[in-house]
Length: 116
Image (tube, rainbow, N blue to C red; front, side):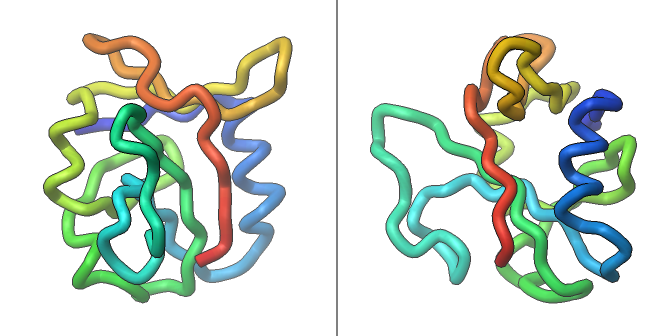
């Protein structure tokens, strides 16, 4: 599995990460785990990019995918909602991060970057 990250998306992420020593988590917000306290509506699929201290939450985010910005961890069972090849991009009109899959199209129309 691979996550392509466009230059515009890299810049948005870099602005939040700065020079800190952190991990990026692709969080499927389903109400399971310490970073997903309430979960999203069952009728929608919600992913978030969570910035956490390096090495934290490895038990809950136990799978890894390669990306243009290094390894990103995620909950292994959330692969059901992902594609083998995905792209994180910025919508030109709204400047919102979007997660797109090669096979399934738009996976997350408004991917938030949050601190964990």
